[in-house]
Image 1 (cartoon, rainbow, N blue to C red):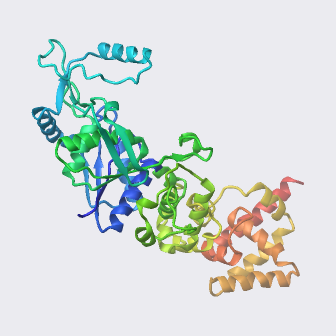
Image 2 (image 1 turned 45 degrees about the vertical axis):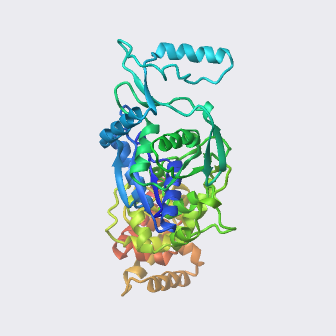
Image 3 (image 1 turned 90 degrees about the vertical axis):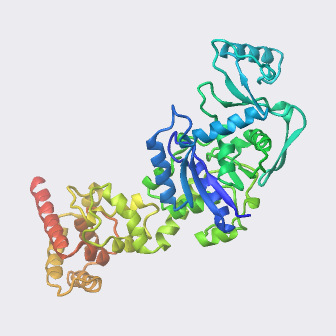
Length: 471
């Protein structure tokens, strides 16, 4: 039997990290067993589904690198098939028309609650043969009323449900459109899904779906229900905890490798190992090792992982990821200096690509002002002759290389009998607008000769203008 898993999001919003983890676990399980991974879009909620959400899901899957072997399949394109299965269930006595009105159902539930009973449909239309004038019926599945249904869950173990507790759920609305529990059963059957990996909020649906499959004479797939993801405070994850959309993590400067590594550790572990390559995950991952309890997000752990990948991944790859963030600042990443060289000098200094982009703008854009504290400390009147000497020494270089720049800066410090910091720091502020940058020789090398000399000249003029203003 070939393993076939699926990810089946509803396009009513972005791809959130809980859904992304479900997709990841399903993808890993299929890859580990040499199987196939199917993407299915469950868009039968016509009022809430939209193309923008579909695009957001596809974009998130693509960014994470979770390529699918089949799909995306859309449920709205399969309505004829669902109607066919509903009719079969009707013909074989496993479903019936229910003519109860909304008012009657509300009254029924109120009576049940008054008797301290669980609100549920009581099957009053099960044996009805005649239509009811003026009422468009729904179609309900005739659930077994005796015995048990057992879910042999790959995460939670055996979970048993009393069939008497499962009411006759609606499988087709009064307008003929199918409901979730019917469509998911038909899709998993038609698409030959062998393993359904999803959140544990679906666990209560599972016995109902198993019973529909049995009524159709179909062997149910294996199920694995993943525990939920909590916020750092132990509460249900929500927007107040920060980014919950996959693409928001991209926007916040995280690499997909970091988020993949982070998500897989939310509920799964392999000894004390924290960092995994994708090949290692495919080899080591197993649903049987997923924890039973909920996992809480840890933003500091994600930052740590992201910094690791920024430091260790190929600089051309990191540069491609960084280029999007530079574009958000209207920087053309194809300009000078090459972005991969900026990555090389900045990768040990940044936890996110947003941070790297923000602190690298001076390589590509001129600045309008100096950082106030940096200028007050380093661009004093006595710095002007130092900068003029640096301008002359750097302008005279035959080659614009880090080594020659280093020697030139050191030579000016020696000639003026100043500590290197008294020379390099005013130069850094003049060249970058602030007091923090990579080593001064690397910084100036990447800036280039023309831009460096122009900024030194501008700094001298700024110092002189400040001196005039203060007299």
